[in-house]
Image 1 (tube, helix red, strand yellow):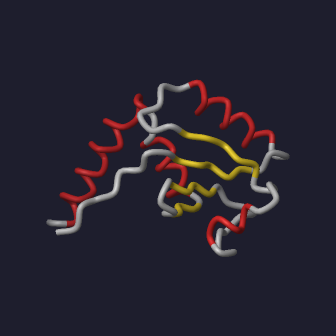
Image 2 (image 1 turned 45 degrees about the vertical axis):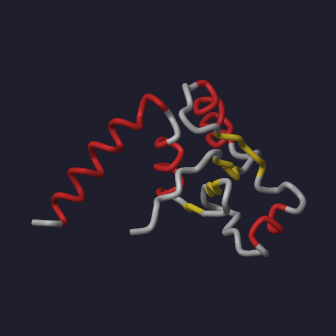
Image 3 (image 1 turned 90 degrees about the vertical axis):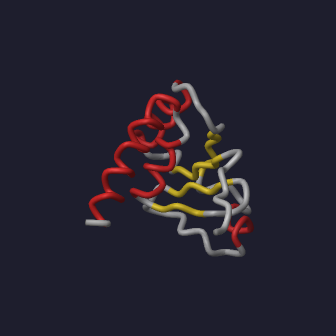
Amino acid sequence: MRAQHKPAMLTVLYDEQCAMCRRCRLWVESQAQLVPVRFVPSSTPGIQDWSGGHLPVGDELVVVDDVGHVWVGPDAFITCLWALKRYRRTLRYLWCRIRSAWLL
């Protein structure tokens, strides 16, 4: 069984022109974090160099961890919540419920 990687840091690529994106950034930054979350505007020069030009930057939220794993859209949002102290337990509970339903 392969050991599961636990990110040491998450980087959120967001649209700095989007009012909702800016508001979400402020909200995440105001929360207690179990994993540090930093925000980088998706228009930052050189952003595609992070993944050899394969980051799906544009209309979707994108989260990249410290070893290059990428989450997009709803998966990126859940990953952000996972990094926050207040939501980690809830997400673990939901994951256990979903997993047990798959095993039925």
